[in-house]
Image (cartoon, rainbow over all chains, first blue to last red; front, side):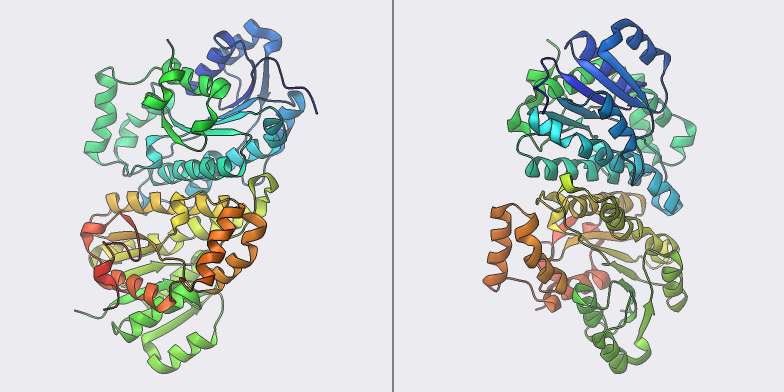
Length: 257
Length: 249
């Protein structure tokens, strides 16, 4: 078995934009980590990080979604075999009231938000055990919420939290955290403020998202991204299995000073 | 009270069968059961209740099966979504097919029955009983896929209740009930669960603390017939304070 890496070596999914991109940037700049990313596309911003940090970044292009698809993650791990942490961030929010859903809707969301977790997690387990590693599952308040029009997203995040709990229970050598990153100013958040999304939600619930943005209350990706990165690098075993709020008391030690 | 008209999935044995039985015996309901197979118990109920019980045979993961049930019962006043599977395995020994099967049955098939029934349930101010589990909020080793599927179910219930004010939806942990599923659980627990967890399961079985299907079924049936809209969206145990009014006297 390879020796424990001297620098954090972190695999990040959904890294091309939003929270994932911010996390990659912070890992490289603030934590001197080596980063391997998996994303369906290589955004200009992600490429720029590769150009800047060169050998410290490995970009893998591929889709981690799907009920039977560990190949992309296995490919990533071939290139960087001994990660010290995973940040499982790839996810989608596809809105529809239950009455309007069909099977394809549920499969799409679960393939990405739930099954990709397993696809990425399982091949990395031996290395994570050997390295006393960490897994950060990027969750959401939706995991315990009930926002109308969000059934598949809510259910997928509830499933994510559950997987984190069970995995932490099964794997005492790996510290696992499900983290609510807050209402973050990202393209996913912007999509909620559209008229299309409004038509799928309850007006007063939709208004909350619009108001938060208008009042400047959205979290910057680099703020909660810092907590995700810090947990991946230094997260305490004592928090393993828990659902954490990015700016809650347990996460205070992991916020940017 | 007009005659309850209830579709029950996974009704050939265990909790589903017991719930159907109470609906027929105690509440004079018309029941359409969906199950993959016929059992002697279902046959006996058919013999006793005649056309008050329609048995639809088929795989709940196939949409046509639920549509057939709705043809037999076009205006349900309640659904009892009970069909489920528990496949054991540790995450590090992940079997893709097991996770796929678990989510197909425990999560995606819910909507095969639920979605087409929504117009009638709205009109009837109906109820939907989602048979959940303590696993929804648990972390038992060896049960990652089952735990996650039940957590997903509870989130669906919360959201669906918010979306559908005319339908009362409940996620209910039916208890550790004396069924074949439970018997299987006892057998595999030492292989998949952590030692302390397996010990707990064995202890419940050995001390006679398993819940009788008819007791749990009574609560589920009563909720299906008269569950209070005030509880809509909630997750509770079959013997919790919320459920006490629905227990057998």
